[in-house]
Image (cartoon, helix red, strand yellow):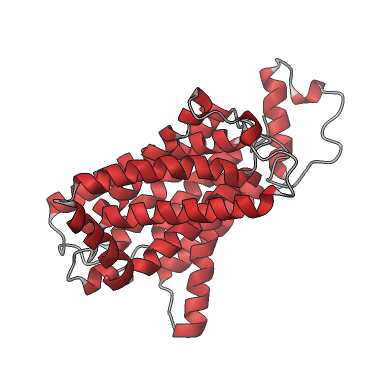
Length: 329
């Protein structure tokens, strides 16, 4: 909407929006941690060292987040919304691959199929019959798609790294204490990039004020992105990145249903088809059958067939949320 109001261009400084978002997240995390501190048995400060590898490790995903957030704004300037949403759905596939390689999270063959279906279904729901082909130059579209594909891989890497930091490194530390560390690095990185794009300190301050207070939807976008970032960290703490991807897809469908009731939105055939595929993907990924399939895979890796096992799962856990580590290992 802001892009449309700006005559096809984003009407605010995107680097300023990224910096303001990181600063807001840092402020909220700090205030929440201070409020919780008195009731915590372990605050995180007990083992914290400012100059150490564990602290520096937060700089890696923080830097990646800043880069990918700026790449998202670049892709938005090159692509129309349906094309952007279509190709943005790709990133859930590298997330699954990296979660297996880096975190050891196991998933059944049916769950891998469900990831493909989810990407396909979400892509179809964002396709319009009158998608406006030809309104964008071919070179611009190709560049935008390339940016999104590269950004999807970068997003997957940063998300999996962030999940590792939240769950594995100093697991007793409060979530908001860990958020403070990654957001601090994010503010430093975003400030350096934003300053490098400004001619002077005065113009930099002016761009911040314009983005936050006067640009169309600028302040709302900062607030929304900050809220999303904080919610994502909570999802990674208690679930995993793929659960986050499925919940995002569900929110899109639920928002469309709400729009249909409140604003008379009429879903297209492509949207209904895509929504049906997404629902199938949900069942395949979260169904209780995956517990049996995972045991089958584990027994096959140990060199014996499932029929040779004395017992199968006595009571398969239908929940997709593992008790430890983000997935069954």
